[in-house]
Length: 396
Image (cartoon, rainbow, N blue to C red; front, side, top):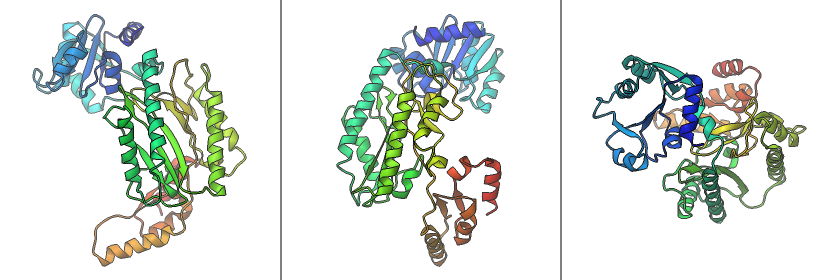
């Protein structure tokens, strides 16, 4: 069954006369449109493609079964008036919409133009997307293969002195040269103490001998995304690095062994903890260790704590457990004091931020040294009371 038919069956079941779609990935899923800044209005009998002059030509040949509606020229930049035109034409009384995407301001302005009632929905099309078609599985497989070939090339470039940004740039280039879409999405390349950051940003930090280098990256192929995490050591790994690496590998293998249709995302997460349950690393595990991939890098279903979604056949997911929550590097205090002195001596105006191992016990010392912004992740996530921990950090 195609996705448009699935949507209309859902509309019939929920007694919705129409469905307004604004999420780009959902627009592509239903219509096949590969461009941007476009919207769909689906009724029981018709389908409308709402866009502007930049995309009308492209939509005319990618979506020939849709009536094109230029909301900027014909309706004075009013999405509400454009949707009202479609709704009135088909006698629509109730309209489903994506409640996690449409802002209150946009909903309010649209509802003011409509006589029909707008009904919030959640993860309707995302639920369809969670189960992949054979063609989608093929595209995702190619995207993963491209990312794997790029990894084989990039490891030859990782050496002391090369910066994280240089590695990230080369990695993206290799994927395009291997056949990926030229439209990139952000890649994470971080090293050393930064490698415990969940979504660290590559910068001009030179890679050093002995560093862990973590790459969380992927590419797009025909709109479908791969998402892979690879970690290497520059030079010879020490005993601690080997221990952590081996634990993460075992967590991944245990999770993969538990993944099958009919189980919950939580049960797979619990399987990942077996390798570290009796170690010092248990408090530092990430509670979200996997997710679906497809037209968007984070899709349903999810694997993690409190993820009771049932895994289904032909869902494609990442499995990427890890351990975060690095300890504060002792030299950080002295470096903050040094930066504060430099700022005062040169009459400069900037704020000093500290990130990595920040907790209630060391926050005051960091502030006294000169830090004005504290970034804390694991200390909050792993605490019993988020609000109390945040309150104590703010009092530092």
